[in-house]
Length: 383
Ligand code: COA
Image (cartoon, rainbow, N blue to C red):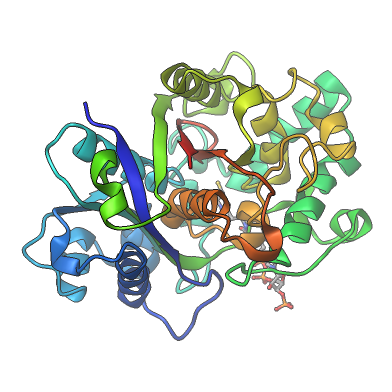
């Protein structure tokens, strides 16, 4: 197997983008990543695109062909990768495996979602849960995560304020991210008093409905310096599957797929959580930002709440989490999220993150999950 490097990244603005279509977004992200990597479009050997549900959100399937065609990149092979909100993370992993195996040399892994064209995105999002046992019974994503939050509060004494702090810190970071959907500061009180979505989670505990796209260009590590002075190296790419329906799990306060994927990633990289300088975690709801730091091994099980309250995950804390603003404040266009996380880590490791730069960042991690944890993808990267 060959070592793999990232030589270019991109992200469109995330938000409610009325003036941009699905195809405009992915073409913009692709073009910017290609420019960033100092290559031409026809240097690409293959394309992998993460997308959860273009069929339900914009009525378009067969998106791989559409994307290759609209980007002027036919006949380069393009494949769609789907694993709900982890589609981007898996597109990245598929690109890495293609380059590592020697099957392809230069690959783009991208992600895109255009969610705001439907009147109510909730039923489409709910298809990432177990249709028979969950969605058809009326549960929504906020309500599934609300059950996880309630249980964590009961088991470990996690407080409502500690959950709110996850959102407060994300918004604090997003202020410095020009590509974020909600770059404004909020307070714990504001989170607690925003409208109730699924008790105990309010509007400001939830990631938003978003449009956006992102891209990452990969090549063999030994060739990377031909294209850029600042390549970022893939140290680990791991994926795990977990039980999709909450009621079938051994414990709904733990996401086992995160544990399995992260332990595999640490083993591949020969690292422990102490080696990681910053992490982009999948905080689609505030409770998930808290579960992530526990399940990734940064704190003991049950200690996520106090750690967040004490500032451990702030930009100047022991383990900076989501300097981009995370899913909560950067935005969460489902299929694009895993790739946007990788783009943020690359900007941080290159020292190009502007006002949100984490000083001295050398090793970064991404954590991208599908649904409530039926899939998890974890990547470790170094400069
Ligand atoms: N954070 C901050 N502000 C938000 C927001 C969020 N998550 N969602 C909406 N807003 C803002 C809007 O910009 C709007 O502001 P304005 O009045 O100044 O224009 C206002 O809140 C109301 O927006 P609206 O779109 O009417 O909200 P909504 O009630 O329809 O949707 C949620 C809010 C939380 C239900 C929706 O964002 C949601 O479903 N989020 C979860 C998405 C999800 O499940 N993703 C998959 C995760 S696995």
